[in-house]
Amino acid sequence: MHQPIKAEMMQAFEAFYDSHWFVLGERVKAFEQEYSHFNRVDHAIGISNGLDALHLSLLALGIGEGDEVIVPSNTFIATVLAVSFVGAKPVFVEPNPDTYNIDPAKIEAAISSKTKAIIPVHLYGQACEMDTIMQIAQAHKLKVIEDNAQSQGASFKGALTGTFGDINATSFYPGKNLGALGDAGAVCTNNSQLAEKVKELRNYGSKLKYYHESIGHNMRMDECQAAFLSIKLKQLPTWTIQRQQIANWYLEALKNIPQVKLPQTNADATHVYHLFVIQAIGRDALQTHLMQAGIGTLIHYPIPPHLQNAYSHLGYKQGDFPIAEKIASNCLSLPIWPGMQEKDVAQVAEKIAQFYTPA
Image (cartoon, rainbow, N blue to C red; front, side, top):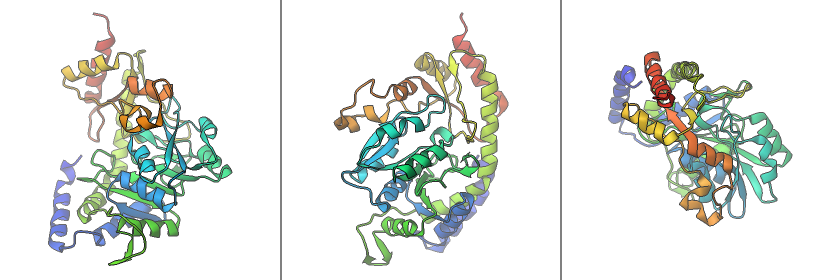
C-alpha cells in the first residue's frame, strides 16, 4: 500500500524538512480539518497517539478519582489504561460473541452510582450498536467516549463511528487502516468547549505560549506525521473497499470449514476489516501450521485485560468474563492488507482446510 504513494510521501517529507517548523504548525491544522471533514465532525484535534487521545478525552470530561467507566472485557489494554491514568476504575462488560463488540444488553447491569462514562470500542473494524448505547447513556446521564482506533470509516445506521459520543478518540498507529509512519492519534467532537480543552491539555495546559491554564501534557501530533496522514487519508476509501473485498473472499473460501467461526457483521453496521478475525478449534496448532507454510497470523488479544498482571489489583480470576476469555483462547487474525490478491486468500484458506482434513 505504501509503494504507490512513495513519491508523494517523500515530497511531503522534503517540504516538512525545509519548512523548519516541526510541531503544531500548518500541516497539523490542515490534517485536522481534513479528518474532521472525513469523519463528519466539527472538531478533530491531532494527538500524539491513540492512548493519549483516550486519556485527554477522559480528562476533558472531568472524569477522575472515585469514578467508574464501563469498558469492554474484550479490547486492547489501551482502552483500560486510559481509565486508570485519570484515577477512575474500569468496569468490564462482556461482548456479543458474534460481533466481538460490547453487548448493550449487559451494560445497564454494570452501572452504579459511581459510573460516569461508557467507552464502546469499535473492535476489529466493526461499528458497535451505538443507538442502544447512546439511549442507555442518556437515560443514566453518562458520557460516551468512542474508541475508534480500529474503525475509521465504519458506520452504524448510516452514521460514522466517531460521531456518536460526547468526545471520541482514534489512533493512527502504523498498523491501523489509516496509519502514520510512527505514532499519532486524534480526538473528535462536536462540542467546541471540549475541543478547546483538549487543545489546551495536549500542549502543556497552554492556550498562549508560556501561559498555562491547567496542568497539561505534551501530547501533540508531529507535523511530519500530519503531512503523511493527509496523503494517506485520500487513499483510505479505496483501501477500505479493498479490505472489504478481501474479507468477502475469505468468507466465501472458509464458509464450509465447521471448525472455523467466521466474523459476523450486525445488519445495521458496516465493517472496515482492520482485522479479519476467526475463532478456530485448535487455534495454537493452526497458527503453527500456517506459520510453517509461510503464512503469518496474530492473536488479538491473547490475554483479556481483566487477567493481565497490570490489573491483578482488581481481583478478577479466570471465569469471571467467560466470553472474552473464550475469544482470547480461540481467536486468530488472518492476513489482510490493501493490495492482497484473491490467490493469496485462496492459499490461506487451502492451508486452513488442510489442517482440519484427516490425513
